Image (cartoon, rainbow, N blue to C red; front, side):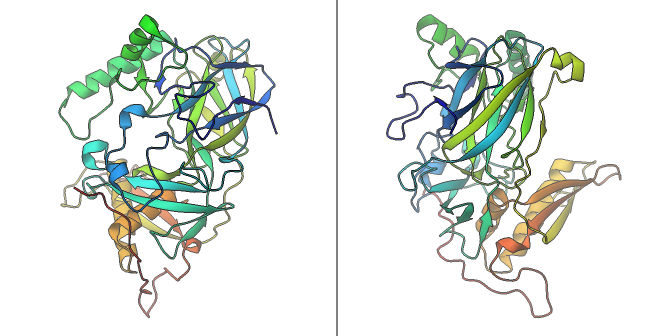
Length: 417
């Protein structure tokens, strides 16, 4: 096992640890640890809400989820000798739930969760159709996930970090804040909001304190969106065996990682749509000197996916086009087309006995494939959702005998009001 350079104790909160991580992006958050190019090491990661979500049959914790506290990131990890303009090469050697802890109150101790966020607290991809908070608990058995809230389904997860990236420079941070503030200004009262501005409340900034803490808390970017530094990209195939190349914007690169997922469908469509968990990740780092200019990788990360996908060989695919449910034509709106494909898949699953919320959870957590299938044929963009039929323990393909009706059980817990 590689040396653990960022340890976490499951019995203590994220801010009460030997090393304290962070939940904002800023170049002045000091590194918690330094590693060398060519070194392999292990990092412990807390699930993104630091234990606020519980293994029970109530969704009130998802309804009240403290978005101002996310994400709980381990780091920053400085890489000795890294300089702005370099590319940081990171190999994911291994990752998984919290080691040797297969039961307990924290997600990652033998279980994880998927949530549908309430519209007034972040919402999700289909928030206008699912405005209330729901929660699904998934139990882990090796690489397999099952849920008491969604019977008849089991699947192999593609374990991956939802979030990993390098620290921004001061100029890049200012660019983020400027462009996101301009977007918010176009509709400042929108619910959910168009973007999340800097928020000092609940900021966790590693070892910073005093006046430096106050200054950085007022400037630091929230971790919710993906940006030029990587960040919260939520790519389900970014798993074991992947190699990623991150732009380096500050001396040391200051790599951070968190938001581990046991599984996820393309798009993480419920927003809390993966199976969230705490756990560990083993990394190897190296540097490509001057790589940002050499390869033109200055405003994005590039990666080589791992080869550990589950072997599903049969899918049922649903298509959607850029026409709203009310019949309004939109011009090549791929986001809308993917929404419609997801809604068609959910409606199909209800014919077998699932509730719409159970169908939505399946698409968020299971390893579905989401694809842009046509983006040039005006006026309709086409998107498709590929649902692996092997995750169900009953036949889900259309047949002359009609759909098999399953007992949906007690269903997905909904928050109280």
